[in-house]
Amino acid sequence: MTARRPWWKTLLGIVFTALMLFPVYWMVNVSLTKTQDLRLSPPHIFPVDATFEGYAEVLRQQLPNLGTSLLIGLGCVVLTVALAAPAGYAIALLNMRGGRSLNFILLVAQMIPAVVMAMGFYAIYVRLGLLNSVWGLILADSTIAVPFGVLLFTAFMSGLPRELLQAARIDGAGAWRTFVSVVMPLSRNSALTVALFAFLWAWSDFVFASTLARNSALTPITLGIYSYIGNNTTQWNAIMATAVVASIPAAILLIVAQRYVAAGVTAGAVKD
Image (cartoon, rainbow, N blue to C red; front, side):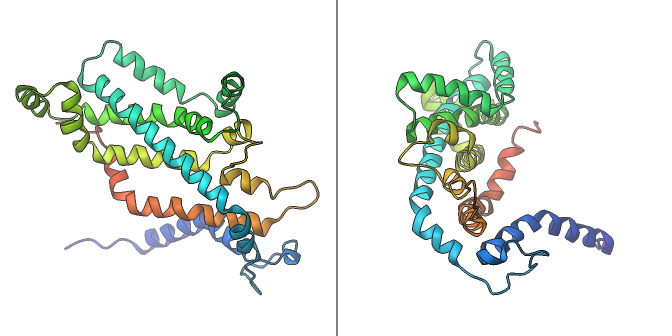
């Protein structure tokens, strides 16, 4: 017979969940509030006389920006997995010299503030002609995702049974064929986890976008939201409506992939 959870723990969980989700609720509430009601004191707790004018602004102005963010996110996913998976394979399974030192360098690289990296990218992109380009943002966002991807792939692949790799070599498979036909199919959860985090990082990026693509004809959704903020007026309902719409793809991805993410993040934590 299973023990029943104490009622106060359930209540505490509900309270904490409500506190964490309240900013999301308030974002939706403000997105449905009329412009003349935004400065009321006290504000409406519920959307009284709701309006969809903020969402109309999103559909009228922000759809191209959403498409640009989607393109940047998918490009970051492809580049991150293409670089991180072979790197993790080499460090974990090919006995690459200096693998531990490289892992340490990658860990340190993740601690560098994004604004510092953005300044460095700006100086480089000016010379390479990559300013105000989608490809430049894909490359910049990948520098955040690739170190995480390499560390995660390394942790998972180091726990793969060596017998499978030896069997592949006996059958005549080389290092690359073993990677493609054996290692990557077994690393599906880790690959999906890396892809999800890479997409979310690129989707929510503002620092690189505002530094490297402020004058671009194709701007991501984060700059689209920022465009509503002016010196004299701020369209809060449009800002929050855009934030709600921009949150939907990320929320769907997290819900769909949560099972694989849980398995991918804990991969390599316990070894036989």
